Length: 117
Length: 108
Image 1 (cartoon, rainbow over the protein chains, first blue to last red):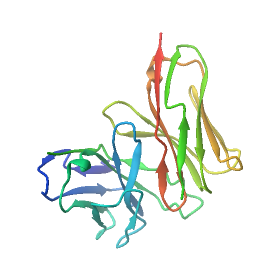
Image 2: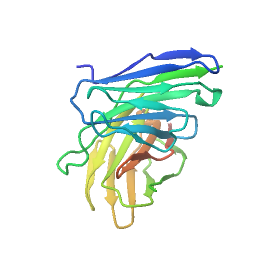
Image 3: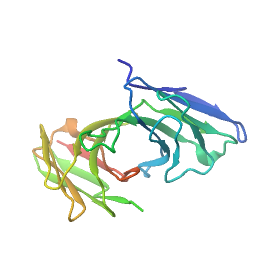
Image 4: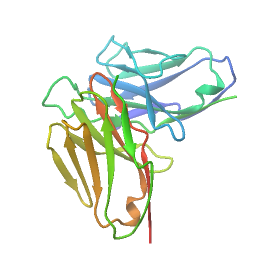
């Protein structure tokens, strides 16, 4: 049972390059999330999705785009990478938190470490 | 806008002692989460609290929720070294917002 899988796990980019992080979940979850984690900052929400074909902005969306074309996948794109985007990126998924009977527990991937030079 | 605070941010405690981590959130939340993170690792779910007065316990950790005070606590009983980690709380409404984390170090 894979759970939440992120690819790639490590990546080094030069300023101005673009890349896409892929998150895949096999738990049939409605909700998916992208966070970034920086030292001393906790996790900050970048974008999230409440279902296939939907996306919404989180706390720090600037410089990132996302797509949820398939229920099991949530892609995070950087169009023109900047050194400030050096971080560890975590993807998570959960059941529908809009239903009171669901715990809405977030299941996290292993993280993707991105360095922008 | 939902904001989540934790205190303390850093905690060094002796083995065998008890302590409490506090989590405050700024607006209505439908759930309160506690997670643990070991260095270089992902986040592991500890508790999900769904309603006012909810209390959950697992081993030496006990979490509670007071929605009227917008406060959750994570109580550690008789700490052991294996509990050394960073603990995060998170609150949710339309978004799931995390606190800054509490770095816990348990020393002999």
